[in-house]
Length: 238
Image 1 (cartoon, rainbow, N blue to C red):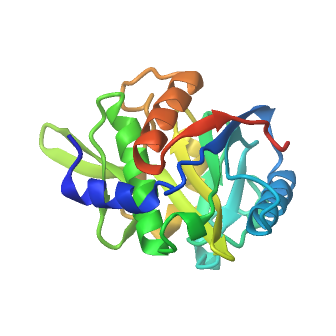
Image 2: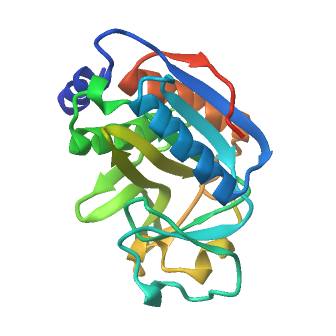
């Protein structure tokens, strides 16, 4: 049963006209710059009423991106992977194989025109998708993304399993989320992820959940429908 907070979020974010967003998956690895160009073009077309909404799932080759709030000191190894400056919100993050990146191009004119509610919806979407695998996750005050609590004899810690970084232009969203399915977690060591040094990162496989990318995609689709409504199959722009 949906919590009251989630129910309120859903009621604001589902399109009143019931129109479905397109859902597309790119095979192989998509270069960051070509992905951003395609995303910018699609977001502009949505704003102009020339294209429908798109949720685009892909993998990138190993790289770091720096959001608008990034601090140079959080880039610990600039020579390790390419570094891309990004117009999305947030700080440094890593993208690479085994991580599902989802670029979310939604028309917020049709979904409440409330950026805070939209970000809350993204959080609830990820939390619901992780719940499909029996992984309890939540958000933390003052921290971006979605977190899991880990415990052992005499210790406990919180690790980040998914990142969120969005931009909104003309009330159309782009950029989006990334979920760690089975990336090489050592690749995060070249940055301070999202500017938070005292916590770690994890993945579904690191938590002992042997999920495939296809299984993660299915969970993400289920979670998206709960929060944002219907989807239809679409074509990846790249």
